[in-house]
Image (cartoon, rainbow, N blue to C red; front, side, top):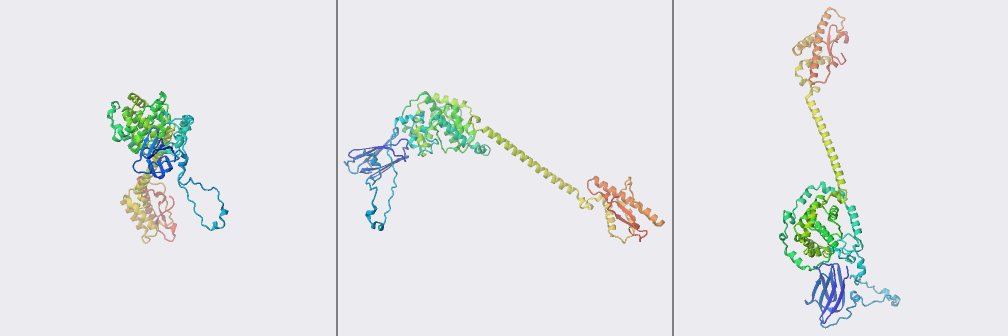
Length: 580
């Protein structure tokens, strides 16, 4: 808390207090009057006085506040009319807490109490919870000249010398009174470069496209005034009763500004309106405007500063919102100074209702609201034209936005290529599995050949019969009958090919003439069976129905002498496992 400067005077019936509280909120004053105690609070100021006489609050008290001088004047009635209060000029004594005037001995002789003091119960010391106050001292004029300027037209200085601790939420710059404008600019650029978050920017750019699109489609009130910028007219602007009342509270004054100061005032106005329109668009009416203690040198300088600030601090950090805000400001200036004044009044209300941002009204906005009503309309339109012609590009912001976006595009492209490759691999593996399933469906002969080769039932049945013979399934049947039956089945079910295999298996015989006849007859049937089996195998292979090579399992007719010399004249049909 800050102890304000104050003065006291009196007459027969009233005590008059004059308290100097510049840059305070005029809507919030708290006063406490009780006997000899007087307390005054207006953030960030607090004053507590212990008076030499008693005052009373009975409805006769009066108060007034001079906004320009920052003086609060209060007339309080005395409890006893005609009572004279002594020592009103002793300001330090008046600031002392109640009861502190009677000093206690600084050193006590504990031995004087004797041993009885130890037996006495120690009394707990009471703490003084009241705020310690110091007498306010005015800053010397020589010191004020050394301070750097800020505020409207760079007309203010020394304001933050005592209010820095109370207003640290309003400005980020430490000790602005002792910081030169060049150093302020350097510190600002350095802070923005440090705080800039590339991840936040990329998220707004690629993942919040729908939300950014909705913000760009939002139509604020100034867009509804005149769709055609050339059809500007101040008469189309209407002020609410609250805005009119606020204008009546302003003090009518003039400002003596040189050419350089006026130029800075115009550029500062552009910066303030830019912050306002960006806030309105991105919050859709929920305001939160900021003002910076920066001196600009051109319109382009203002736009660059605004663009960098927009990409570092707000929730939505998109370059399209920056360019749209520039167009909005151009539209406002094109609509005339009445439209600009309406924006300033809205900003004044925002700061007036937010603590401790109210001080920005005293430093900037109040003076702008008064000054803009006196400027010539042609200057407003000229500034609107300059804004229309201004070009702001990403590389002007010196935040490497183009490099970040190119890197992001490459990353997205690589990710898309990887996804395509994965999809192709999945599709190829799926097609391969489908082909395998189809081939398995088309070639069930590998597991069940007897169900699919209906045209070769006879030949395959013959093979089965021969296999059964080899396993001794029909040992009771005579070889001759078996051969005859085989010939009949081959004639009925198989077609004999003309090409005769060159390789033949001889039938060894050492028997009689009858045995030779039987051997020649069996040789004939053997030849027919072998040829038809090979023909059947070729046909199946041509249709890609069978992968089994029957040539590896040729049919052989061998004599019993080769197997069993005891059975003369008997032939056994077998399916050999060896080669031809």
